[in-house]
Structure formats: C-alpha cells, structure tokens
Length: 117
View 1 (cartoon, rainbow, N blue to C red):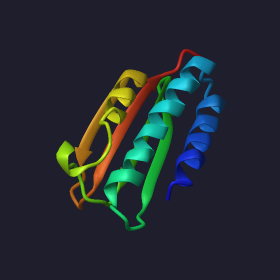
View 2: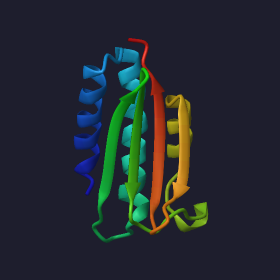
View 3: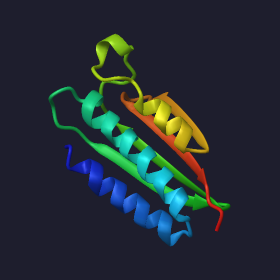
C-alpha cells in the first residue's frame, strides 16, 4: 500500500496544476495529500491491505480533496504509532480541513485549498 502515497500525490498534484494551482499551492497540496494518504497506510488497516479512496474537484476557485478509507476509524494516539504530526501538517498546508468518522466505518479527511489562478 505504501506505493499508493507517491501515486496519489502525483495524480492530485497534476489535477491541481491543470486547475491553475501555483507552484506554492502545489507544494501545499502535495504535502497535505501525502500526509493524509500516509495516515491511511500507517493507521487504518494495521497489517492488512485496504482500500484508499481519493477524490478531487474544483469548485468556485477552490480545490477540494477527499481521502477516505474503510479502516479502523479514529484512534487515540496511544493506539497508533508515530509522532502525530501528520494532521498538524495537513492543517497548516490546507485552507480548510475536516476529519470525520464514516458511517460505515473508517475515516474521511476533507481538505480545501484556495487557488489563486
């Protein structure tokens, strides 16, 4: 699953570039998307393989990216290895961030990026 991280980062970055994102905006998108997908790979499915769903769209000059999974859902920090910096990096990179548990299980991360172009 770790090969998903660069592939998703590249695809969303290409989409954002086609939508007119500046290089600075693309850097923010790349970082936030990488962190969101890394969280799925590291925390959602333990040692099992699982599905990562990523959608991106542009609405009224904003790039919206949704990364979701059908994994274990939100866990307390003691249940998940890592430094816990990923969500903070996403929050500082994106112009908007929502994290919620999905009704059928798993977690959804919704990020919003304002596009200057």
